[in-house]
Length: 474
Image (cartoon, rainbow, N blue to C red; front, side, top):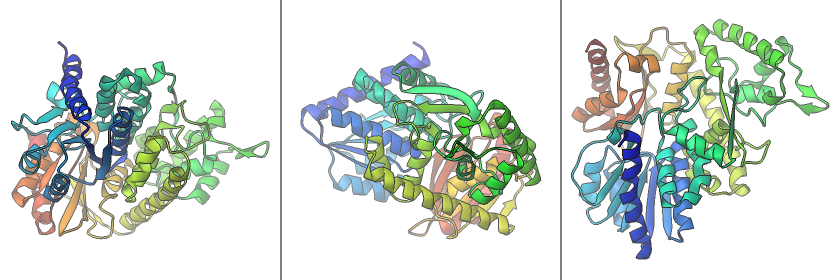
């Protein structure tokens, strides 16, 4: 049996457990992560359970800790499904949820525990890549498909979750690993088509200047969030903004126009101090969701993911869940308002970082201590953007922190694929570095995080710097 076959077989006991509870008339408690991938996962599971006629409640949480788990335990749930979170917290579930059956659908670094009431589904348990090959939404999709083949229509959300987790690590920013099975399902169902192009935000829906200004992943210094500057750049490139009285979208440009635009963008990014190669982050595979109405924000997979991410980061994950479950009316309007606010915040935070010399270079890492100046829900996004722009001159992981509630700080660590190939695993670093400070850490090799008490932050960063150095010298 191959690793993939072993993984798919591991889904069946979880499905049997879920159906047994539904047959008994038990309510299903779903807890998912509060980001684009987690919201997509929550939407997949909510839809699948709803189709079985079960009563359910779904929430999206920023993190797993004793307070969160104790709150869930107070509901006395017969069964809890954790999606896109939970693999690193099996001990907490054993302690606080002893009477509940638990299903974990995750792709983060797991810990080991013996508990017959926990059914643990994770690609890492089968030597499959969870950082690049499948997201939390992807694992949830495979679970839903195992419940009923008719749930293949949820494959589009599996794609959205993978893009939200930036798993487009293949050639031309394509999906790899188990995600290719989801892509094949979505294409087979007529829900997805792909092509290679500039990956501005709003490829199909936005006037070109807005699409450029709204693009934050990758972040374009001087252009992201600056529609006026984008208009100036487009004029410099000789791009006509309207055709027959209608604003043109990126999809309307000719290949020659795209080539001119790409050349102008290259010059701009070099002028802004970016690495010349970073402009290639703007080229990649476009994932068009054919089941969504043309000219809407949900037609492009990355745009859909950005909308879900904005809902989560702005404290409105329920809007994202509603959209995943089919609401295209009021929830969409409110979600787009949340997205506008989210973009403004990111722009303000990046300006704050760039105006002062706030990034500190240590021996093996860069660090940014934002304290209360950046929202903890957005610090990871800021870290990803700063690492991707090429403004950090030496190839080192970027570790950013922001103040959270109850005297805690949120740590977000980001590394590149090249750093991972050199031996860096930030998930292991975060897990090990947080433990002496009564914190919790984990994640993937290139994207990881931790929570710990604020007073421990200086020594924690020293520990991270040391552990990264040890990994590089191993």
